[in-house]
Image 1 (cartoon, rainbow, N blue to C red):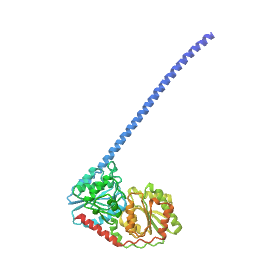
Image 2 (image 1 turned 60 degrees about the vertical axis):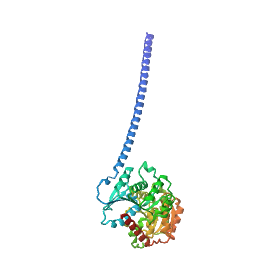
Image 3 (image 1 turned 90 degrees about the horizontal axis):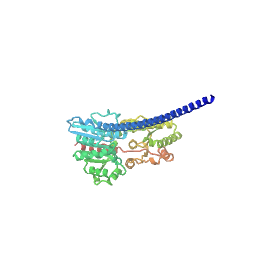
Image 4 (image 1 turned 180 degrees about the horizontal axis):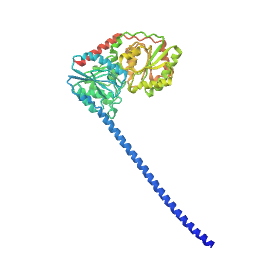
Length: 458
């Protein structure tokens, strides 16, 4: 009886084990199916995400192109009965203070000569939505061109184009501009050619160039422009030498003083600032790549001042205000330096305001071209740091010291280290004499600009 019972149990146990085995097999099959489903879902999710990314990229591309078309200067659509429509171009509206000073000076000479003349003036501005145009009245504005279509429209609409000041003769991004944003140097070439071919007047006033120009297409078009342009002048003989190496008719080129020298503000007598408290104005070029060198410059200056003077102020002066560029950079420097004698000055955008700030400084340490030039014109003791790593700076900075400044204290940016910059700082405070600029240069520049504008308005 017991044997039969045991046999019954063993048979049931074998049957149960078979059922368990079948169930395990089914579970395994279901697990594989679930794994395949999950894998399929994952692959589909990846494909969906890829499609979403592709659609997003297409949207951004289309949106970017639509934005460019939105910048096709609808201002040109308006109807005018004015006889002459003049377009003034430059690196205006960023704003970069040096270029703003050139524009202000040029308009100061132009506006008095517009009285009783049937002429409209338009200024081409950089694509900066925060730029305040309230300083300018009775003047129209358009944005930088973004396409060949823009160039054609602008050349059809305006009667004369004037390119005012700046290091605009630059072939560096010329080819690149056609597949991306139109660089201003490309605009200089393309707009000038169109005005000339449409038998309209084109003027280049007080420009400068890279140390070398090598792009063949750029050079060919530059030759055509110089051969046929109404008027061309450069602001330094170094740029003239650059162009003489690549163009056929260099005799068409005139040399004039930088436009900011023709501002009557410079004729006002400058008061001698007492030196009980040493005020040192500092103008630096401010990018992420410049941060470490700027720290070296400020720390070396600060250490010298702490060891030499009882009272002093180091004043950081912004010159480039696009998206508060210099201000933000100076704030980071202040956070690193952490010294109550180092101050940040607010950005200003007019000639009178920057002259007031410069006149409060006993000494200047400057990197930007127009800050160096303005300091020399205001007879300041100045340490110039030549920003030699940039293609624009060699020609114009070296010319400043050839023509306007006998008291030379200059160091190349690429050579700035604590020991090297300290020598120049010591010279600035211990041995350097005052700069003395003859007012005749200012009077000469005032006459130059008046004569050029008379030529334009003929």
